[in-house]
Image (cartoon, rainbow, N blue to C red; front, side):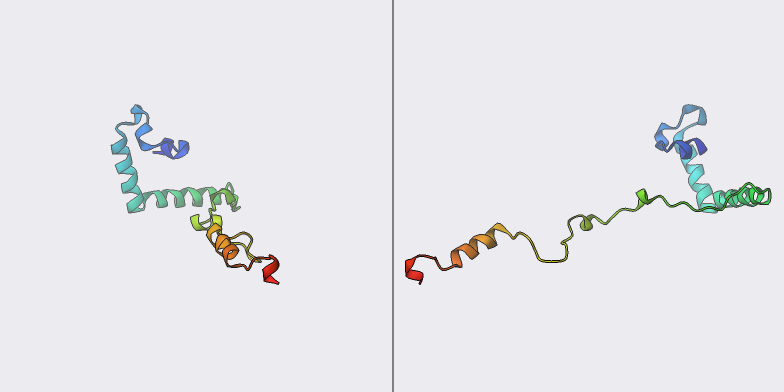
Length: 103
């Protein structure tokens, strides 16, 4: 289980020496559901903190923050530049001509 978590490989790529990947995954999921992993982590943190081996520094990696898919083409504030070609064509047709009879 730790090999898979350390490498980030898919469960199906688990080396054969660890047994069938389905069995390992089921055990991992069961331990996650019943809180075994949380208890193990808490125990290790308490022991290492008591020994002075834990540095309680928080690091934030901004690469995990993603914009919503609709944010990519958001309209900018300010005057709108560019219009739809159908709207531009309709405006050209509606303009009075600048010929001699217009004056």
